[in-house]
Image 1 (cartoon, rainbow, N blue to C red):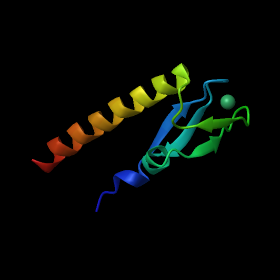
Image 2: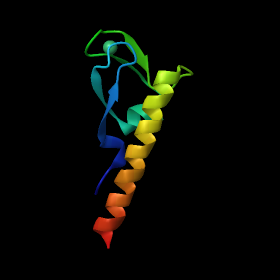
Image 3: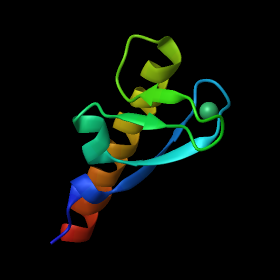
Length: 74
Ligand SMILES: [Zn+2]
């Protein structure tokens, strides 16, 4: 069974643009991760506009993923 929570996506660090791999579950639970580039903490949901941008990108990716799954399911 395909588990969306285990899907890995890349979130660019607001500080250094390093692309950190996180799971959708991490985002759903609003976990704090450590950037692999600059080692700063990144909150997956906060009021910082660059983080919001990352989350918008994430939502778009999830939507694309759902559309893809629908096509596969036909
Ligand atoms: Zn960073």
